[in-house]
Amino acid sequence: MGGRRTCAAGGHGVASGWAVELLLGCIVTAGASVQFLTGMGFALVAVPALVLVLGPGDGVGLANCASGAICLAGLAGGWRQVRLGAMLPLICAAACTVPAGTWVASRLPAPVLLSCMGGLVTVLVLFLISGGRVEALRGVPGALTAGAAGGFMNSSAGVGGPPISMYAVNAGWTVREFVPNAQFYGITVNAFSITAKGLPQVGGVLWELSAVGLAVGGVIGKILAARVPESGARRLVLLLALTGGVTTLAKGLWGL
Image 1: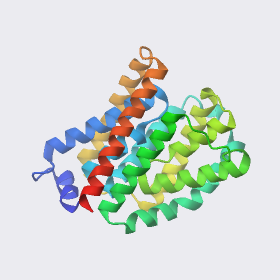
Image 2: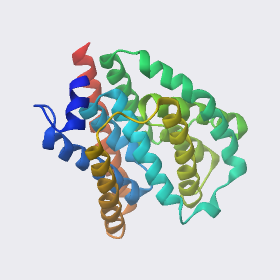
Image 3: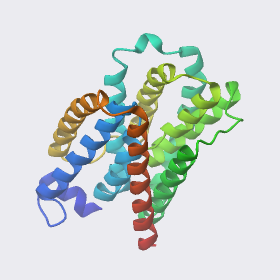
Image 4: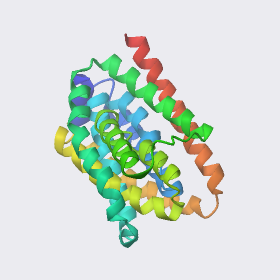
């Protein structure tokens, strides 16, 4: 991991250089495309790949930064639709569990962390595909549970969205209600995670490529949104996420 970090920052070495930089740019672009296409999915699609390229620490950290930026851009036109009263317990619970997620992630060996991340993404995607519901995720207790789970998962594995999606489904939110509130939650919980862990230790070139990837992905996602049916787009997101989760899980188990 140290070699990758040095290579990514300085542009030297076998495992990095232009190939890794190009790959990282493509990962961010793909994640941003599906996020703007469906309103969700950046973390599920991008985190497993970023973790494989940069390692668990920097991969999740960069995903937190990129996801927060995407949510901020998406909320620019819909901030008036945020239900602050409903979001307060979610955000407060997340703020309490982000430090715990950061602590756990910093102390697990890389293979164990990769296995946990890959397994977590795989299980969550399969649950979403099955259309499962959790009846307990209702009302204030449900919001506190979902927010706490989302905060822990976001800081440790970079995927804090699924518990909020499950809460919204059980609360009966429409897609129009869910999207701006999920973006608001994404901004705050990623800000909490970045504050707790600090910025990822990657070079300036990777920051620039990530910014370009977000911009290009946004354009691609908006173009595709007018042409791809929502149901097909969501199936694509879940398929990509499942592939990434299984790959990360396999790499982690191989390293144990």
